[in-house]
Image (cartoon, rainbow, N blue to C red; front, side):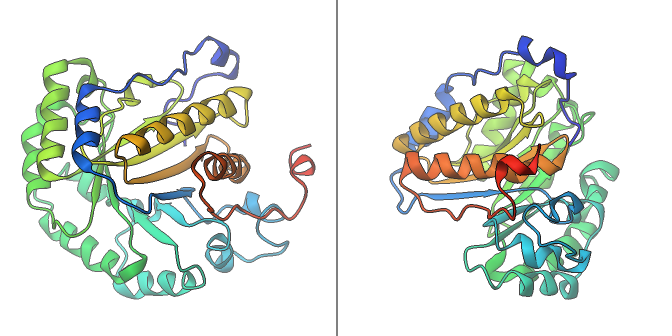
Length: 305
């Protein structure tokens, strides 16, 4: 993931401190009420990573078996494959079958780029129907969906965003990722779009990337968080940032947060399993959870020497 990447020598100059909670978020959490058990899901963006062979996938694992191995280590995946192609029920059903070994596993499909980036949400009813027909084949393995808007999708397109979201099915949770800076730079615009999300019970993706601190907006329209964390190759700041997220998640849970989806990205994805393991270990200890940790074939020290 290249979004928000900065040169390594600039990392010490970046203020990674998470912004304080907004009044908007505090109100959302206070209205939520307590729901137990508190649900936490941690995963990566893709299963097809050759760099993980010999790390968490057994040596000589074939590409066709990567998903079989991935589901042994994580309880969810941010499914970016559906961004590049609209898959039919047959393919989706095969992926679902591979995940049956993990009863807690969920797929979180990304809306097709044909919808978000090419048609830009206009006249996209036919593709949206095809997209939903495919992903509903996940059945009980289907998690929330997320709609990533392009970097050049500006607040001028709020009417199109409103119309599109208002016509989506309401039985599958949806989160939206905003990227253009003006969504966050102008208070009236920010309030308008996040109030729209809240009215429609749509979640908001929080993207924690080094070079785009504005995307760490800390606005929760629903009592469920969807966090896309972009690390920098196990730089010391990665661990400090994860520690702060764990603190914030614990605080949000105590205030009414019901669910967390935490997806690990790295500019070099070979490092994602190790930092994911760190996050899971810390979340388990802090929140009294028992999320299964990824199992490494070699010792962690040996992985990256």
